[in-house]
Image (cartoon, rainbow, N blue to C red; front, side):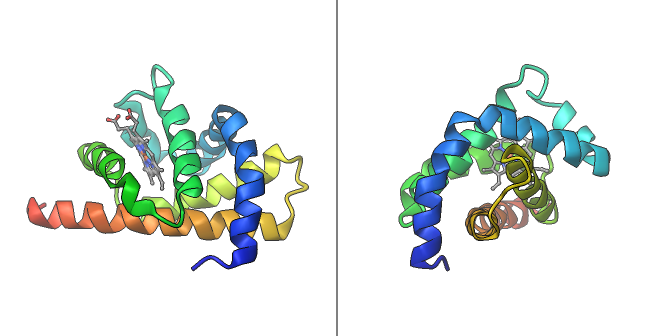
Length: 146
Ligand code: HEM
């Protein structure tokens, strides 16, 4: 769970992500695909081409951070994304990879000056959001028997 201090940090720093989400997400993809070219297969098939997905990722993380105390209100959106993830064969083990490069990208975007408490607050928030997706997608996979 997030501490009050972490929530405060997220509240004051989330605009960075909202305003520069597209740029930060491009940095995520640049490093992530260099280190994990196998993920290109998953992403290339879909709307990476027209550049909508990078923006969607940034927007959703921002939205989730803004609603971190009542994420259940985002359930309809989360389910919709989870279905798309499922269709793209996104797996639980992919989440820590995206999370790792999310934090690296934020730090790089901040010019390597990312305060450790800022980075760990974002990391903790990402983990909460990712675990919701992972649980819902696991349930979908098992219900659908694959
Ligand atoms: C699609 C957010 C994690 C791969 C999407 C979309 C959103 C999103 C909002 C929908 C775009 C649209 O409506 O067109 C997130 C968030 C994540 C996350 C918030 C973390 C908490 C991941 C991971 C992977 C992944 C770990 C795989 C490495 C994809 C792919 C699509 C997608 C391939 C395209 C699906 C399609 O449009 O058919 N994601 N995502 N995402 N995501 Fe994620």
